[in-house]
Image (cartoon, one colour):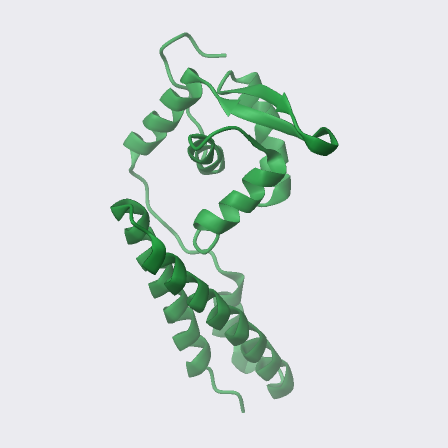
Length: 172
């Protein structure tokens, strides 16, 4: 645990969870769902990451255990130290961003796979990103908060770009 008043350094996954917990106590399962809904189009958080991070954040004093929910689900509550750590993470800002997309890597090398496999890869992902684009557009239209709206607009642009990329891949 860090001295009172000093925020420990946290990673982006921890920051994502702390940010979600600003909305109120949540169980691990609810955090997974909330993460997917709020920022799943640009920042993935797996169930295993969430359940690995929650005990560490609790041990560091950034979370405390809340009420026990149905089916023995455990709720977590952000602490004052957790709020400070999240604020410090937000303020640290710097660092370079990188896109890590296994799909884009596969598409880069799509010319080396048989045409039938390439068609399947493109069509399956085109359907997925088409649906994500429709969902992102609806979410952007419904968002009133200007910061969340800006991020929702980014999700629309990202999904639109992925659809455009998939449409540009030769299938034959």
